[in-house]
Image 1 (cartoon, rainbow, N blue to C red):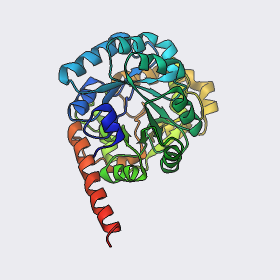
Image 2: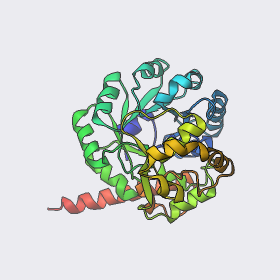
Image 3: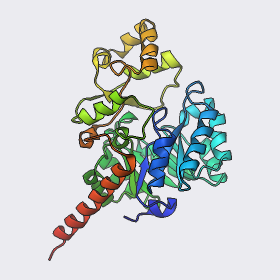
Image 4: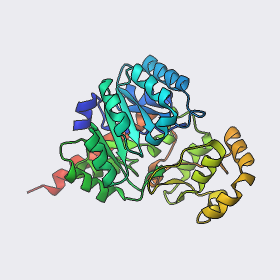
Length: 333
């Protein structure tokens, strides 16, 4: 499948693996890139959680694995607290720089000046206009169905709006795309590719998450997640995370803690100090009953833990077959 995205990035499959900060590192990114997609990892959180040395090590490991294009993603509102990480990526000549969740304007021009292709993930049409106005090379529109942090716009109407508003910019769809049928749907609508996170959580190469997280995705029917700010309250107080801008929240698996406090976030803010020691310890021992297990509504299509390259190829082959069969059937005379 050849699209404007594959031509621009020099990749074989119209797939970008999501730069899931503190989740997707060099093993997953290198595998995806070597197999013909665009592998990425997350490069900016608060400085205490993702360091410049980490960014340098991940870049080196990917390049030891493949000479194909790869990317480093940045949570844009974290960049003022992680400028050294951004500088490290630019100095290393990373081919693709990705921005998510906030105004990329102060940073995007620097990335382009360093020779990088830029991708901006957005959650509203206002954000899309801002990113295109700043000169992004690729626009990624993220729907409410996505795991982790996302906005409130559902993917399909958002995607169609962006495609009609910005016909000259390659547009990538994100949120709920985990199999060939969903990839075929967004490609048929006009998208140039897909940005996928949940599809790769249950991959052999995703070594940064506990096995319980992968098993939760495999067991999910896609209806067991909650869109909530509960874990934002916890992460901001426990780890000093910078608040997300705009109308954002985090989609994660419903567990006892999330069920208890969802809708009671104001009360949680008042009582949060009592929960912080246990929460920090849960991260240290990967207690999946307490830490957030982030994945999207497309988890129902993830059936097993497999190599990331196989996941990507199977999704693309299925999409290709669906598009071929569907088009020939619809257009028969």
